[in-house]
Amino acid sequence: MVSEILLLASNSPRRRELIKLTGWPFSIRPANVDESALPGETPADYVVRVAETKAKAVLGASVFQLGLVLACDTIVVDGTVLLGKPSNKEDARSMLTRLRGRVHQVLSAIVVFHPGSERIERDLCSTDVPMRDYSDAEIDAYIATGDPMDKAGAYAVQHTGFHPVENLRGCYASVMGLPLCHLTRTLKTFDMYPDVDIPTACQSALGYQCPVHPAVLQGLPSVQAEARRIE
Image (cartoon, rainbow, N blue to C red):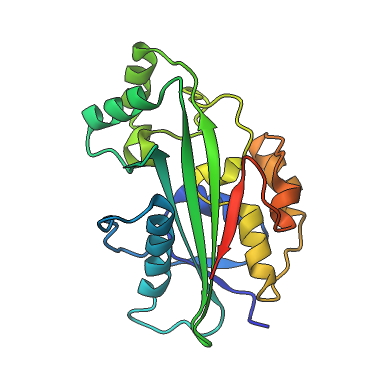
C-alpha cells in the first residue's frame, strides 16, 4: 500500500475541481510535453501515450517517492480527426461549426504511476457526446467569452451560458477532463479507497444523473462508457 498522496500532473482548473470531490489529498505539478500525434496513431493510443508521458515527465527535477503521480489527457474525436485546443478564434469557430447537431467522441485517459516501484496503471474512458444544433450567433457569443480557447474541441460541456451538449448518456466528468469512477477503480488497485461515495459526490456537484457509473466501478463495459484497462 502506498501513501495516500497524489501528485496531479495537470494545471487544469476543471481537473482540480473534480479531484477535490474525491477527498484525496493532492498537490499539483503541471507537465509540459510534446502533444503531437504520431503517424498512424489511433486516437485511443494517442491519448493514453500523452497521459503516460505527462506522468513520467513531472519527475524531472526531484523524485517523488511518497505516493502516486496522476496524469490525464482528454481529446475530442470526430470520426478519425483529433480536435485539440483551438489556435485562434477562427479555429474555434470552425470546430464548433463542425461539431454542432452531431455526435462525436471524447476520450479521456488516466495514468497512475508509482515512482518508487515504477508500477503504472492505465485506463481509458470513451464517451459519445451529442451536440445541440446551436446557431452561428450563439457560436460568436460563446467565442467572445474567451472560454473555448483552452478547451479541446473548443467547448466546455459545463458552460451554462452556451450549454453545447444535450442528452448526454455517458460520463460527464470524463468530458470535463477526469473520469472519477475510472480513477476510483484504478486507485483501488493501489489499495487507495475514497472516504466519500464518488458517484454521489460527482452527480451532486455536476447536477447530472450518471447512468454508467455502476458498470464502470464494476469494470464492466457499457454502451456509453466504453472503457478498458490497458496492459
